[in-house]
Image (cartoon, rainbow, N blue to C red):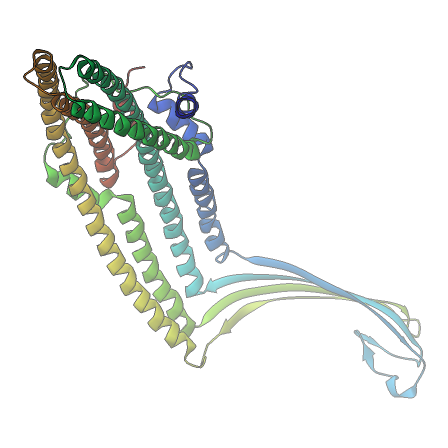
Length: 448
């Protein structure tokens, strides 16, 4: 039962091994087309680009057309004789008319300080949308890369677990044979059996972890991921360029897209103050209208049409609004202070992120170098323990420990390489310089 379940899980984990391996660029292209988070950011950018036309509309003229139709029926009555109805003098007592009117009105703002500030603010809001979309592009690169290498790391862990299982199986069989011929005690057999049971449990955990990592990648690219191209054996990783930390930190403080968005938000908060202060300022508009009235029907035999055109300047001076304007100004000043502090916090976080990523790259490079040496040493130690076991100077547990140490070293080495690559991408992201082209050098490290 256990073997059949293991076979099913392994078949599920490697269902697409016969397909051609996809590299990082190909997976990223799938994410560009299918990632919902990136599509949401693209839609937000499209919405943000409409801010400027909306802000400009408040400065342009508005034209409106209004009208109405009125039907008037009344029996004769001396009281309305001689009065003017819709521009026509009533000469008789019988009224049966139909009047229509149309008014065309044009209003051109001449001085509206709030509208001008809204227009200037709309440019900032559009720039914020662009910065946020650029950040979303960088986030997609790092998310896809992290998910890609998480799958590779899970595959490495599974492959090493299976290799360790094979070696432990051989060691268990050897311990049983030696016990049968009397050259070893039952303790060696029990130790080998315990090591075998442990590695089987680790193999199940590795299969489950691989499925989880593949599901995480599938959530980004929208399809079931196929076989992924692994790193080339013995690949050499490059150090960050420039090799000093200060340029990276300085770039993060100025060019990080989170910092750029916060700077623009801070400038927008200043516009909010001016826009709210405009509640105390007068407004001035140019107003022009043309009106046409027409009366027809029976009204002592008289009907007529009148046209009126007017143009002028209209102003409004606010005198008192219940202290509402003053309150809104105070609120916007407080929000400006908040935006300023948010900007400083974002700048510090970006600088700290650049420092951590830079140190992570250099630490990772040193760790990879050390683990490469440890792999060689662990391989030699395993061979020595196997030879010592054959001649009787080493016991079974020594060989098992040497095997475990070698596989742990290989697993740690692969993870150190992946972490170093990811820290290199995060470093460029923190500095605001990560682009799609930066995936090409990473893709060249893969065995296609």
